[in-house]
Image: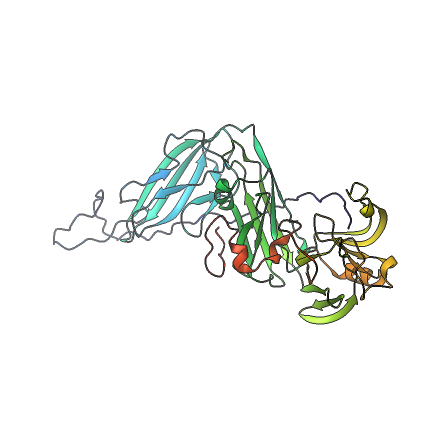
Length: 419
């Protein structure tokens, strides 16, 4: 088992689509006088042609934020109270100088989300147009002001790079310093958006201390999937008086399927490419006093050469400094796949490591040339179960167990994109 500094979180760049536009029909050639809240009858008693639906005729909408509201968070979304059966058809948000803010309506129609955080200490005017079940349009307008920049924020990170290719088990991993309290997780989760192409349902799961949240599908991602992610936390208010620090965006790609499976009973690793067994490798796992973790782990980091330094281990028997080649990190606690020429004579027969998956120099080199960040390795039959949060442990739970960690309800089979 080794240790080196945890990789930092990296944010990407992503531009979301613009808001919905309202399509209006042309008015009838013989125009009738306009009436508030309805249409006047014609002289013959017959109903006249409808007025131009682009001209709101229904009652004014109550917009949120309310007109005159002050100190609104820069994470503010725009919504309105719409009559039963009606739907929001257009939202516009402008600054005092006429600048337009781009955004997108949530898929459930509950609110309109700006593509980027609003600016601190700035006045905005929101106009919401809705169309009722009867085809009548209504409109509401509100001018509000955002708060000044807060002095206390919470740190966050996104483990995803723009334009990088990952393995089929790559979860979307968001990290928080300090962890998010349980009572705030639903509000934070509502601002974490994932869209996949081709579409695949998914869900979020929080580790118990709120320091990480993972997003995954019921099964491994389909090869070729694009993960389009926005963690829109800038200005999100939390109960501890802190606010989210920044928006983080990234767009990554899922590559070909490369799956590793290790059975302690046989001390062999089976390697599958595209679902087909391509190689079987002898391994040496952790000895009984320092067992390897059983579960589905994910390759988080790769180092062709590094040094394992465990001189601060409380057990003197586990203290050492060793040069390591072809190291692939599996846990934050220090479990890796790596070359171990000193144990080649027992690989496939005996466990002698400090928790790592030992393979020969030749096999370690071959694996290193094949794997991607996000490739899974499932280990079974050891004396220890993988601890939640010790690495990217999203796939070490069944789907039914995984969705229990969501702060919001999850539809059967997983949710589609919220935005």
